[in-house]
Image (cartoon, rainbow, N blue to C red):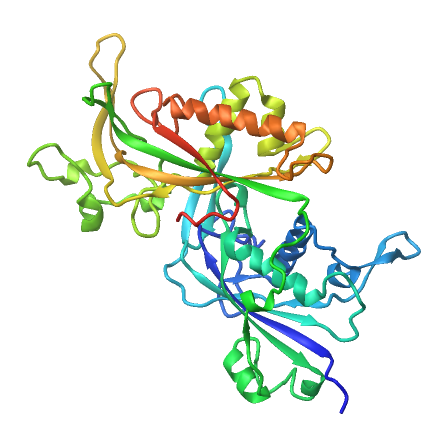
Amino acid sequence: MSEHVPYYTLFYVTLEQHTEFNTASGEQGNDVDIALAKDGNDNYIIRGTTLAGAMVDQAKKLGIPVEYDISGEAPAQDKNNKPICIPSRLRVDTASLKTPLHDAIVRQHVAIDEVTGAAKPNALFDVQVLPKGNLWHCFIEVNMIDCTPRSIAPDELVAHVLHYWQTNYLFLGHRPVAGYGWFKVQQAEVVTLTNEHVFDYPNSTCDFTQNKVQLCKQLQVQSTPLDQFVKNKTLADAPVLRKTLLVTLSAGANLDGSGEQWGVDGFFIGGHSQDIPESIHELPDSVLSHFSTGSSYKLQDQDTPDNFFVVDENHQPYIPGASIRGVLNHQLIRANESKIAHSLFGSLNKQNGKVQSSNLYIKPAYLQHDDWQAMVFHNHAEDEFTAGVYGSNKFVRTAVVRGSFVTELVLEYIKDPDASNADHMKSEVKAQYDALCNALQQGAQSQLAIGAKQWVDSGWLRWKVQEQKEEGADND
């Protein structure tokens, strides 16, 4: 009896969403500027092309050779000198949402002038996102028929990439550099089929892409956990490395040398207008319990804010990655490091249309512990001549005045091939990293304001920076 030869290798993958996520639909006429992509049944999806592109890109960054029958581009050209496209051995299905934990929400963004700290004109837009914590089902089929000999088989390439994403973030969708679309592989099972299954798979009567158990039962095969399938977990030197910084931003009372408290450093970052409660009493008790009045006074309708700080799907305050990103970018510009800022944070040359992509990814800063505290402030504009109230310009605002928030900064860089030290950075990347650390050092001295009202009483938090190894523990 002849030996069985490889036929198809199937991967059943569960992706865990660690931050909010948007993959744009591209449709016009929506209520938001950037709406989520959906299928014909109105279900949220991640397109297979998005996942396949991320997989090929990550393989190249890991130093894995990507053959033309994986990328889909043959090493030849047609009569017009354009690459000839061929079918790829990879078929990545559109990922579906397993169990939606929360409804989609809308986030509001605005560009900030680095000189004045005020909003730039005509730079307001909103994004529809799915909250963090969701699980996505992903199915990957690898065609192993008549596979030519190579240094790494197509299914091993997929396995290595998925294994990397178990401990390192996968970036998908809209603006991962600002904290959207951070995923990790939570679970992955592999099913290997041989030519004895040629009449059983694919099967038009059964949707095996969604049901691994049914496939294994009907074809009498067993699945293998990804960790067991990946034989050699250590790859050759990867050309692209990551350096991760853990940053804790703390609000609260300051301490002097003797331990005495003085002052309070809080912050305010406004949410979308649709998130503002019509009455302060609409807030859940889990939120109201964190508001301090300093006495037995209970919040009244008159304390309903004109704007409310941004909260996550659990009504907990957080600091968006875009806010942290903007603060650091502007600090570099103020420090006469505009060239480095443009290369580190990305830029668009309006004259020639060239785009410089960013290699710095910043995760939103989420609460470290549920011990946060907020306050309601009643403010009014003052007439500079009479020192009285200026007209009817009274407003109510909120601020977070206690709490610690943790973010991650991930710097991707191409290592220096001529250096003896594998982690050695090229000189231009080292300049980026040093400039970033200098900016963070300003935050460590509470000199890096974030959010609104920073010229009055808000945003001067304490930043604590810690370098983390690439395969360190997750810190959600």
